[in-house]
Amino acid sequence: MKQLKPMLIVFLLAVLMIMTACSGNNGGDTPEVQTPEPEAPVVTQPAEEPEPAAPDLGGREIRISHWWDATPAGDSEADELARERIKKVEEKYNVKIKYLNTEYWSTSEKLSSSVMANDPFAEIVRLPDGFIWGLMNGGFLMPLEDYLKDTRVAQDVIDSMRFGGEHVYGLESWYNPNDSGMFYNKRIFKEAGLEDPQQLMDKDNWNWTTMLDAAKKLTVDNNGDGKVDQHGLAGAHYVISELLIASNGGRIFDETTKKVVFDSPQAIEALNFEYDLYNTHKVIKENEGNDWEDPAKYFAEGKIAMYPGGIWEIEGRLTDKMQDEWGYVYFPKSPSSSSYSDPIGQTASYVIPKGVKDAEVIVKIWEELQDFDNWESNRQLSLENVLPDETSIANAMNEEGKVQRVFGGRFGGLGVKDQLDSVTGKFVKGEITPSTGVAQVIGPAQAAADKVLSGEIEEKKE
Image (tube, rainbow, N blue to C red; front, top):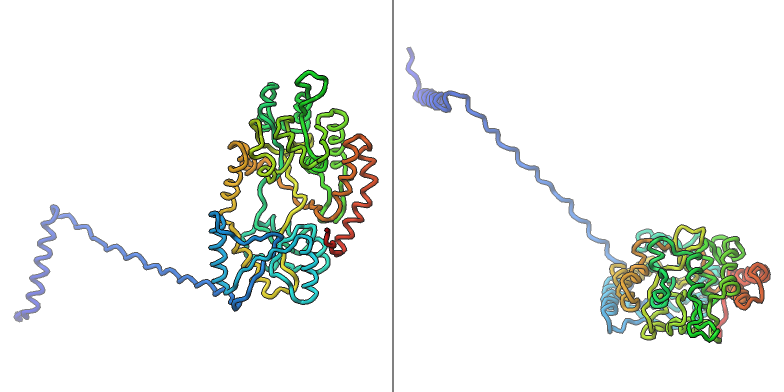
């Protein structure tokens, strides 16, 4: 027998030792084989692409025109935030923001003449829709839809800036969820033992019928001298007509068709109701020479129960003047409406004159100057400063979504409402019926609108 090599002997001994150890482990059971866990794969995050460098406009001055001085004064938190946004924009685009204070009636002519001279007087101009119609149709404004494809502006706001046409001509950050409704005197309702408008709204029973019922019961002679000294309602006839028509699903002007439509069945029904409020039911207090100032004054003095108006007028006309507790609700529904309505009859927006260079960048600059992140909280704070209670604030914020903004019916600057107001001013006194009056002015109203829509620029008024 051949002698085993030393290395082979070592190998066999090692094998023998391993087998002996295994046979004595756990009573001879086969040991569990431990399989090493696979290592987790390393996931490599793709590197974030750097944001493209903003266009460098070479220190150019970006002029923004208002009919007031819109330069942030820095005396409030909102102004400080505005200053910060301006600084960021100036650094990002290498520009200098300058605010122009352009006289209201001169703005339209200044824009059109500077465009014709190929030297727009400002890059961004704030205009009421009364000027926009003529400038838009005269070819003085830049279409903007191609520059709003990646924007924080809501689509319904963008669409409203088409003014019923194909192209977007205006820039607006957002619309408040509600701007007009009904103020009511809580004391008067409580003393009469009546459900007030908020209680009726909570029951989904706040409509023309319940408003009229309350107005009748609250139009009374309190001191027994034979004369009514408290009325259910007060207001300007031209405000009431607008709100009633909208609440009944009607419009005064149709932006899409460019037609005057206050002769529609919905509008006529609303105007007939207004006529009856004045002449049949006699629940609206007669104004004493000033249709605009008197109604708010009567409400502040506690002489009327309900006053339809805009939230924007509270600070100057009701704050610190109210003698009683009061509240704010939506304007009542008509019998045929399923929701409350708040019409946008006229607006203002920013435009970019034709010929402005780098219009796409200008749109981005405008957008980055807007306070999109805080507008709702700013709105809430402003309402807390003027409205009397949490429920009224919730209504103004439209927290429950009960009121619908009515788009597509702006008439500002077209001369349309002037014609309608001449009629309502007469039937307030019972001098003419709505149907007869409307028939007399519908033609002149359309002619006035056509004149503006043809591109004629309204001349400066003294």
